[in-house]
Length: 130
Image 1 (spheres, rainbow, N blue to C red):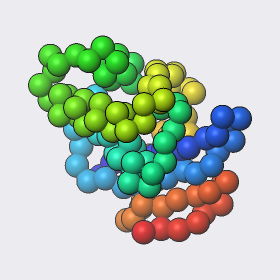
Image 2: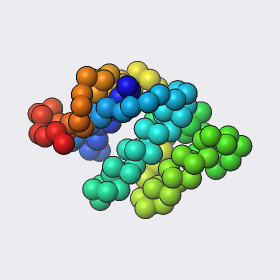
Image 3: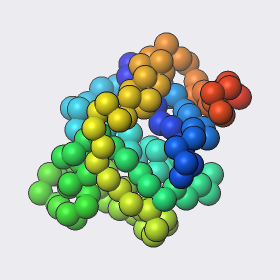
Image 4: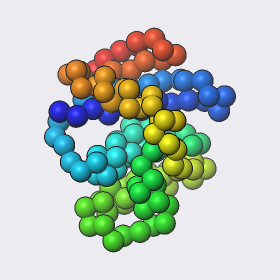
């Protein structure tokens, strides 16, 4: 069992929504990061949320997507899906941030390890689980 976490912030840095989701199965760290980014973009797309900035602390993944690389056979499926989701939000930027700057997502992912269903918080208040 692994976990996924993401947080949405406004342009002032205020957290709008956070999500923690349990996942079954494990993969290489790079593929888990790619899976998490794909899931986050899919999640936003399904809810018609169009972020201006998308961040990841996985520099290899960000560089791979931004350079439109295609040499990693296992990563290509995720790269194609990520690029497809990004095409729906043309004003969005994908950038690398440090692990320290991405601590919220890691904390949520660790929390998700004890969950059965996805849970959401809005403005630091628990709002639902599905």
